[in-house]
Image 1 (spheres, rainbow, N blue to C red):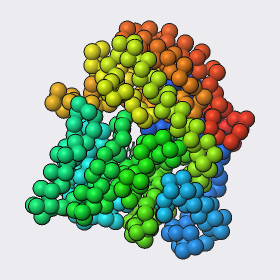
Image 2: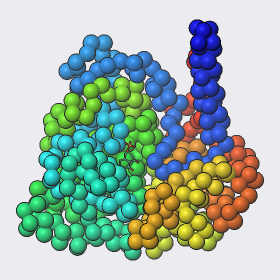
Image 3: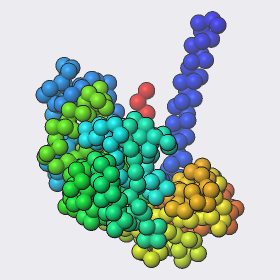
Image 4: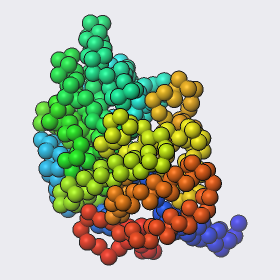
Length: 444
Ligand SMILES: Cc1ncc(COP(=O)(O)O)c(C=O)c1O
């Protein structure tokens, strides 16, 4: 191929990427983003991510780096550490993990050996693949080499069964296989976890008590969800980009006794260079949470409750009716009366309503698979950030119900959703900016 043709083909690909990026931004300006594990960061966080920090190497802890050139990077990272400690009332914070999964891997590596038992929730009961056993290729089993066992779960009450879990801990101790990690939290997390009820039994057995707040970190920071430290956990891991509205990444906060071990495992066992631009973005997001987190977290929970109630009133089978549907940002809906979760997810996407399918508690017994389970999961955190309140959740529920129940009219709903979204184009609960939430910013 002549040189000029190769260059023009490359330029075509180059343009295609930018074209697709801009189309994505426009689509999200006209959509209802309801995926519970995502969020839209503030324009200030986006600016931090674009900085030159993203092109540099640090490795190690501020002041003990492997690379030169970290004068300002160190100051930002130390500030991020202080902000995390303040936000979560922690003795120690490590902002280097590049994701929530990596934060969990730090815990497995630091506090357990191969074949040690970890007690946690099964994926179908709300656990996450990072807590999963080797047979499902989960991180804890496949990478951490842990013997992953489950807390018995009470499907009716949507909660780890406390009495049966105590019996399980006692019998593991008796068998000479005491748990070394007790891991709470999860991907489907509607209600508080029984940390207070089980922490002592786990600690007496010799386990560290960890809470995976990947989803609910922002609610804990805003004082609107259980505080795992107050209830006896000594480590909290999280993603920095779900209810906590930062850039994608992970954070670990802990009690002082674990500081050295976490610090020496994060680097060099799980990251070499960590993502320094994201550390800056985490610091900005945490500063914004200190300023606005209480109002933000309260509105998230009010919105998810309002969304659940409105969906229920439209006849949908919302999970957790007996317990008031939800105490978090999430709402789970059993859609099996109308189709399967994966198919409904696709129909909703055609209507610009972005959700994800969800395995519900009995799906394995029903022979259902995660590709097409019986449920969908919704999160109110991103719509809340766009300024929506309880009354807007009724409109959102209306759009959802029209697609799920009627199963058609996606094109019409799509137009109406785009119209509805016009009034919600700014990021709230952040320091003021003239930029739109999904504004595409050109540099090149
Ligand atoms: C409970 C839980 N833990 C860990 C993770 C992994 O987080 P990340 O995607 O930041 O690696 C997730 C992701 O959704 C999660 O739900």
